[in-house]
Figure 1: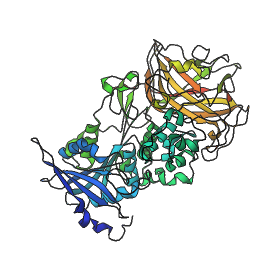
Figure 2: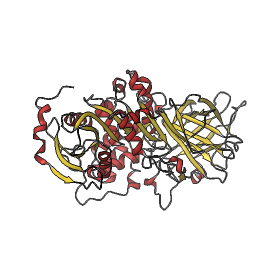
Figure 3: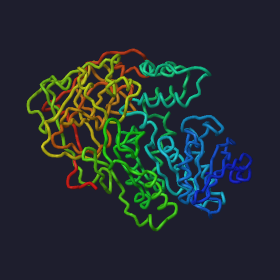
Length: 583
């Protein structure tokens, strides 16, 4: 990438806005924290803190670029500095101490390049730079990496994306509560204006008016909610085509309940199998745990305690990664290097593998069966290993946009807007008449699977559009039922995300619902269950069922059917794994 004239020599002007703080060493290295205004190629300066042992020789650098206030990360920066690194923590453009205007993700690739280029010219840098952080702070690593900055030697993207459209949209449905809440928190609002009740705002139709319902204009929210197709609007935020050309080692960390799980896992697979450089393929690692977005490394997620085995020391894992790739430390290089480390829920054990999905996994099918009365957990829906040999009546439910199936049971402490991604007891939802429930008999032997879970359904509706929301559930002997994996498909996107087409009323079509990466063991005495409804609101937006798009506010009640018979074998497909033991 060409460097603008004069940019390579801007370091001589950087100390004009410098503040020095000296941190007590307490018997360890004396760490100095220096705040510097680092100019980007367009003259905008970004507030940047440099933590280092001033008496040490040049060292590798760990860079964290964040929109969430660099100063709040001071303890982490000090830990990296005490471990022998220079820690550089920077506010992204338009946030906190940095100049400019925040346009989410819009400038992060270029700003990341400019910052790394500046770092490598400093006398305290050894010439090798790594990056760290998760979510937004993880995405900026990939954005910088595709700019190919000299000196970037390793990254550790945690719970993030390489295609922003694929992160926001699943099967044509948008992660409404996530993006509306994030944009509202990161968009300046008029002085004195308080946001409206988010429970009501998320129910606003058309989607193009959600920002008005919250209380003030948010152009970025409008843009994200009104571009459901992965067209040219998203091109700049689709890094996937550029990844195979990279030669950077990457530590990928994510939880199975994280809304970034598909993107993080798919990016690992792409880099491990598709990187053009063979050595780069070998230097990819995936840690896949039982966590959601806010609980990485913890043992309790949602309402489930996964036990002490679920805890990991993420800092130690990252430090080992940087010691290996930035310091080339012989001790780190000599350690075992399993490319995949994944957690199996249920038996709560970690497993090592060479690939994802792990070798030895093979699909097994559970067929949806009933006599046409699968509504609620008191109905006749069941999961069988054998498909129907004779015609069976279809199961029917009515999906009303005015009363969507909530993502989680609503409680006094968990209102609609606080729907959780993690595991919660699905009992009250399975008592709704607009939810179809198919459960196996209690298992006599453990059923272990690891990989991507999917449901292939034969469906029909009487409206131009409809959603099929599917949950895989583990039913415990005491009746509590915890979601393991979730997916959704919007009918008009059943054949193509690029070219949606209306449903034909009454036509039976086969659709595939992606439930994402999952690893679990269903224990003896437990039952496997599939729940199907017309919404997972507000984690995903409601389908108005009209097919008229995000600028139209009209709705229709959809009468949806799931068919199961000799020619319409609706089924759950699990990647079963045998012959491996946890550690």
